[in-house]
Image (cartoon, rainbow, N blue to C red):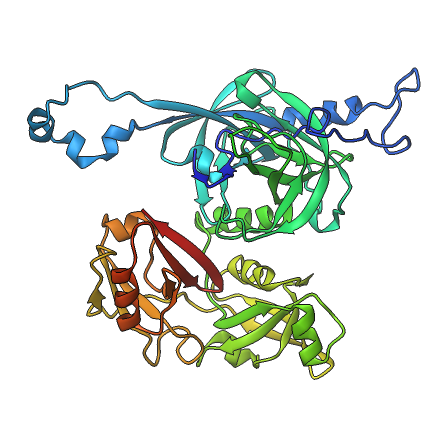
Length: 460
């Protein structure tokens, strides 16, 4: 299970529970839920409808030794006296949600089915069906499976944009493999970003318990509509402390659409750099709003430039939805397929205008003559030259090549990444990067710009 500091990806994780969460949470108020024959509030009628749409997912994956070329080498094993033994398949479990009964489509988390050799879906009625992976997106931690469309019950989609903090929610999944379990809670916060759990974050936060076995489970509203896919928790000890996260269903549906069409998410670029609109920035720009993304740079010959975006424009809407910060711009653009248009609503000089930008191809490095970096084995970097992404808008060193299987590839570096900081030093170019890395001790901290996404990479 991936882990980042105290933030845990809920691999095989995710039942939300409010009745047993720290501090407790109130039951839905009378009038929001139906009453049984004795006048007692109950969610049973709604749950009877939706629980057949939640499944258990069992995954058979390779033994870690199978992916290590040294451990597969008999001479290496003999030299270090490593005994020969049969590779043992690894088995894990998670949850999923049937979203299309006619076609047998099941949503879950990418980390639940990552590296799977075999996937088996167990329905509520205990039938077991083999599943095929349609596609997966690590950036949002969403995966789409297909099973035989045999007497399935699908869950209806809700609208995650209509959620409010304080709304009651219900989670359904298979925690600890004990069987389907239903728990309840409230929405604690919306639009959570910057947690470093996934590349594209806009989480629903809930105070519900999230436990092993529930990743990919359903978060539903009191109408029984799917409004999120559970994915992660914050837990210093690996257990629940009442802070859990679900991927909003509107984001999931955008990912699902591309996975059906292409088997992957084809992300492009707008070629614009933005910053969150803060109260101080709003005051300087003379605007009376505090939510949005301020354009601070536009790449030459980029889709953003062709659409007419200018520095100091404030992006307040994208793709028909309001923009609260820079992360919203990155997410909307990142979920728009290459070649398709995205409508942007701007505030410029006190006037609201709308423009359309056609999302362009991502940067593909063709210059393999960059400079090698001793501390980043397998990477070649270059100064940002004319014609490269972000030239004239940011300073740093751009990665132009990554050797397959190298140490640089294994830590997640990619061609097109711009390194703008290292070990608390600002990087203006390759020379600065080399100096910063030579002066630093392990672990190394690298600040990256990947498209419109800012990342921090720690190399131990």
